[in-house]
Length: 97
Image (cartoon, rainbow, N blue to C red; front, side, top):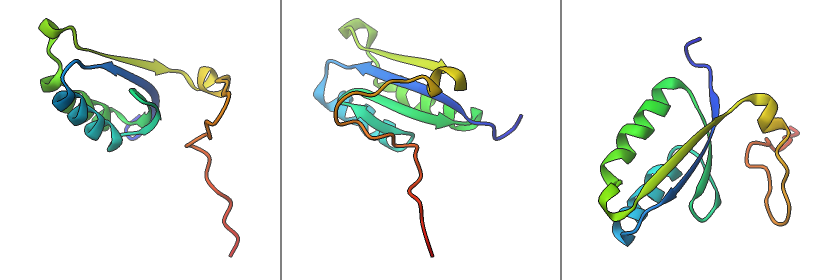
């Protein structure tokens, strides 16, 4: 289905400060930072492809860089557990007009 969004967990380990900053900046445009190098994203196919295409140039395998992307089903997402200071970024605040 076009436009259907899936949930992704994206983590990275980038050696270079400059490349790591660029990866973080790219990720901030696609999802929510939930840990220093871990993002939660809800993306459709087009946005997922765009994210991967933008990230690829900043990974240097020879330096030991890696980006891991996990697609999670809705059932798995609904069973996620949070401890400590970790609000759910996907909850919409209730607005009363």
